[in-house]
Length: 478
Image 1 (cartoon, rainbow, N blue to C red):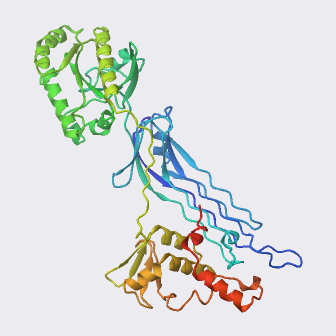
Image 2 (cartoon, rainbow, N blue to C red; image 1 turned 90 degrees about the vertical axis):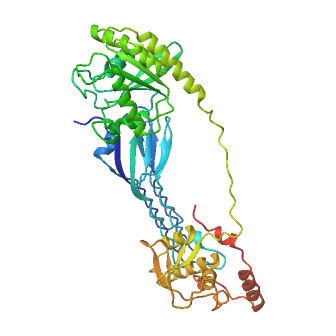
Image 3 (cartoon, helix red, strand yellow; image 1 turned 45 degrees about the vertical axis):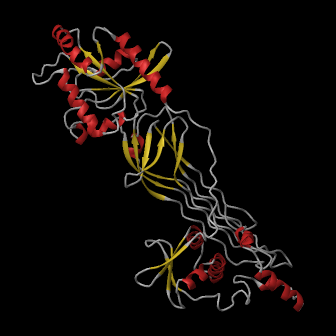
């Protein structure tokens, strides 16, 4: 039965936002007491969080579909809906998050590090939040936004200071078992180690971790054997240790050729050329192994390697090796750039940035793309004429109609708001040229208005024409 999984595809879906409520307060002798519809709740996020007690992605291998809860809809009496609960998924230290195309979205290193894999949808505003001095009783509310959904890939890259690499049965598992308290499976046949093993070593005042990577063979970087699956676990290690078998029974192998083969696989895999290396000649407790180690040691030292002759079985040469590794690890840690204090970078929006774009496509369709227009469309109930009118007013105030006119759009032309796979398409009827502002705001409820003198009505109309964009944006959902 599989107990270690270091790569899974996860299907995540955040919670949808709750719909706003359209409600009018009613009392005896006061049938229209004003709007009191509450806002919808926010949908829950899907959050990945590092937990050092977790060492495998096995849980997500068996259950790859994960969804956060939806926000509750608003209710009358100014009661807002409950927010959806966030779904927190714990992952091992060293997990890399990728999208379907293989692009890195996040690299989660360190206990408590988190990443929002799917953002919950905003809750829709109720008609109480949409009311204003001119729109006293809106007969509509905004819909909640759908939460993000998609597929992500989780890859585990072991976080260790030292990686032991070498051929199968070179003695890597035996070495990590005597250097640390790790208890890997040890046997006298190849590919005994099927998953990376971690051990903690203390040498003087330095404490570091050692990873035993499953054995590499020629062609490992192209997927032969188990190498390609587990070479990623070497990427984070600061020091590489070549464990060479000096007592192999294969006539076509020797420590020097084994070293050349493994180095070639590491080179083809890429990104490991700058790591310091040590060479461990293992199994010197075997008479022939001791002789072979003394024979090849000068050649390896001539190449610039520090060579250690050890025997995991007889516990020979381990202290010198552990202190040499501690020295290299300490040097690598000291060479790392110090983490700078978090800086807040403010990038003001360009003066001419309208927040949306209008493009004409080959078939004559005009497409509008932008965060605000697309969000407003998702929040609109197109079965409610008043809500559609409110959307038209928002787009007009943002400058969409003016931009369409400049792009050459005419009455009856097709306009799409949103991406190709999920857009709202309609025949455009410009309202700017018709003087819609002078006719009164779409979505107003005149039932709650009292008669006003002509001079007051003129002043009110002038105030409507001079209203700023900032006042309109005050009704944006959080």
